[in-house]
Length: 227
Image 1 (cartoon, rainbow, N blue to C red):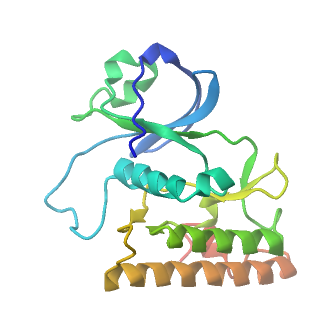
Image 2 (image 1 turned 90 degrees about the vertical axis):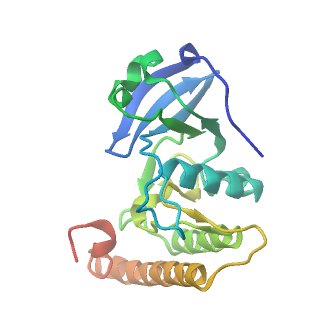
């Protein structure tokens, strides 16, 4: 089901730039009386070097994953951010806050998702066995919906400090969404198994790190430079 949003630029009030990278820019915005997150992606278009077995367009990866996960009820359960829709082929010249896209060859696209204040990645300061168990169960549900998260690091495993017991997975711009029939190639099954193993290790290792009071076994999950 399409959730493409038709709008005029003045309908979106930009409140804050939350994050910027060479791939996308994330804003806190007000749209039709709702505070939400608008994630805008640079679109480089297809390349002959793109692997045929993997989606590498970040907007397509994220929006496709959200469509699937919403259809399976994960948004309604609050275990991933609520998904409001997509905005395609944005003309940045009409959006004063999108000047960083003016020199792109292709128009950017965006997703609108739930804004959740006071999020904190899972770490030793907010660790609990219950929270880790929930993260693992949610990942099983994501996989059951035919979606590979593809970046299962604590930076994408969030604890809400405003809502008791709410934990959620975020950031699906690397996600791979498989056929609804459930048919997966051997390569895709291996991806799922690898993601399960990676998170299983993290869940067990963070519990041990918590007992010792410092990051040790899980430090590579938090710091990219640590190998």
